[in-house]
Image (cartoon, rainbow, N blue to C red; front, side):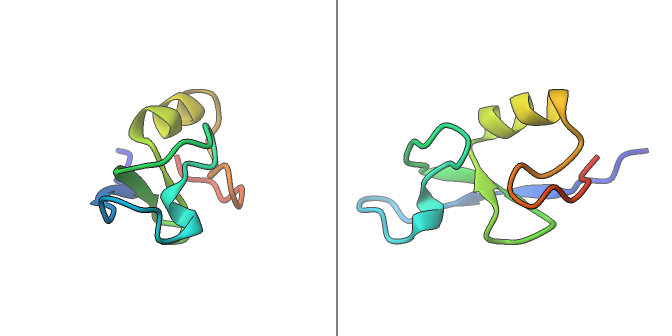
Length: 67
């Protein structure tokens, strides 16, 4: 059984307040993001991280194994 290793979080709407409001995979602004369990600062668009994890087993930022 695979345990859930991330959660969906809402980001502040409007202006970008933090560098973390930009998806590091596609470099687009996020309104809602998937937050990884390896580090709460590692956030991605849901579709981007799903695509990444379908090919890789680790976080794109720190390479910690997620799956």
